Length: 323
Image (cartoon, rainbow, N blue to C red; front, side, top):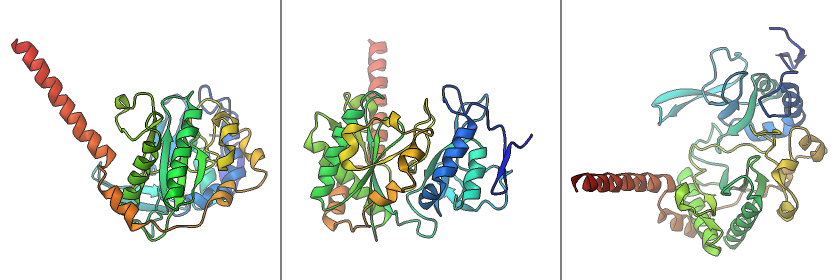
């Protein structure tokens, strides 16, 4: 395979190929963008196990956690046990420009780091609320729901930063200190319920999509081993939008499509908006954590509810057959 260009000793290939169908961007656009914002992205990725979404020619996009066998030995990795698949996975640590360029050349479009660093695996650095509107045309509903969350956070004495997800919604980050994974997860549930309670016609914490009734989902499950797409990361969407940091007073004046691999680096003008907008780490109150511990974990609750509904359907079908 011919090399089009070399940067930081990384050979870059097929730069003029379209990134994916409907991207409106080439592989060169991806590489150039990631190189332009790389310093800022690496601040978020450093020492965090990384999952990436890759898109290869002629294949469907896929999430890569385990690094491939051909990964260069200079890419730092860390082994983590995956409870779901019952095996050890070797995750990459994207700690420098050379590694980021290698990922870009592998057509890694999206970058999803963990909320913890490898040296403190039970100490998430952030609490995250994922604001998920019902469809791609409901961004203003997401903004309204994000303001509910912002209000609930303020009432709890917590400052936050917000960014577009790069898809259809928003991510709210609260930097935390001295909290365990379980404490952060509990506090996140409490805050989501408090926010939804402020306007139950707009927002919901219902995990099962069919039960949301067209409302914005306040997702409190981004805790533990979960990942969240990094600020500035591109997304696998038409036009290749990116996850872009915003001030709270900017939310009414933007749409996610404003921020793409073609526009975001220029809009940043050399600044690191995410670092600039991020508050200092904060303590979670014991009262907030205790409140959250009384709220069922959404995924677990949804699993039990799914099983209950399946049993009810089977019983109804059996009754109909017997009749």
